[in-house]
Image 1 (cartoon, rainbow over the protein chains, first blue to last red):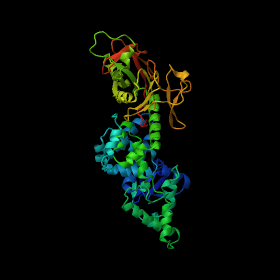
Image 2: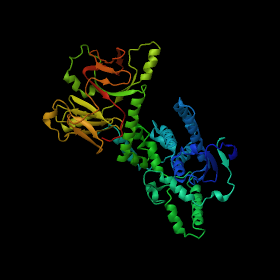
Image 3: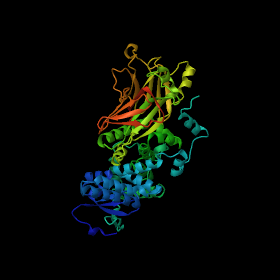
Length: 163
Length: 370
């Protein structure tokens, strides 16, 4: 990791401290992609250290990586930005394992990163679509808590079968 | 991650006194008043979201308590007070709310299956507030797609009567006996893909078939119901729809009406649609609409409702060109493109009995229970 002195001084830097003490130094324009940080910056102005006791460093890093990418892409050129962002988003969520996906989603939600929450919930939804009940349970390690017969009852209710 | 400078925790000065006030500010950014103040209570959604519930929560708690003590200039603040202050620090949304966000993005036919996954999903999907959110979400996304992109596929809903295949002479046009045979009625959801169409043109292969996907909408065994009730249903009925619910209405006999939700495979027989002034609609039919203020589905007389469904020959509005659908006496439904002046067949799975086909645009599949 490079030291903080290498970054340019033209933009303001914010320090974000994760729950495990890991600290990130990021440009204000990047961090304010997150609604929660944006609010704090607007309200408190000059303060440079923001503690985020509910986000682990690993996931805060990933969230900031996403913010950085989107902040950059938005300032570069106008044309094709959406495509670039979309392509990048696709790459970003492609290989996430479920554990990471979960924690990342929680972190994004906590930080009010609306667009990122959108992206991640969409990803999870895509893991549900078109699957059978057992497959969904298997994917998300959900244990059925229906009483015997209850599930069958719901299934029947959802079919044209009529007595 | 060259842009992120990870600074080691060099001094404890990072442990600012106001750790928690910051957290509070952070969460005030949420629009809704936080109902999750009942921290740790037995409520089902009181489960905290925290990257690592076991370790981080405790760690945060300790850190929080320490910060509170420092804030009060190291006077030992009683445990209960610390607890009380921590209660006031809303952490994040509940797991349930995030799960809801996810399920809102799942289409209705998959949600039908999701209901059976576990009780909490079942309860959530059945909640009227969820159903409404899902409805609004899908309507907005479908309509915005329709308006902004010309390459988006377009669905419509087609009612047609299947023609007997081994018949030598076709029955006379508008033969009501034939048309009344419900077993021959077919409902199809047709989705035209414009992109495929363009590819088609590139190849120079001017296919006779409209490029589309046809899904069969299965009908429930309504005749069994009708027999039971001694009301033959339906004879010649109108089909309209609203928010993904198909409304079949028998305008000749007894005002029998049937609501169908093909996505959830549910139906409901309505025998006495309320408050219909008889003289108004003997031949016009009956409207079926959604009251977005009250959130109710209503029967309305045709003069006061503008229903999206139509019982005319279909004119599918599209961005580039219109398709005009017609059924023909030789057992097909054809699509006539007004712009390209091109006639193509809609490849329905069976011969069509002429004279009773109707179609209307069908925006999405709905979760609403009928």
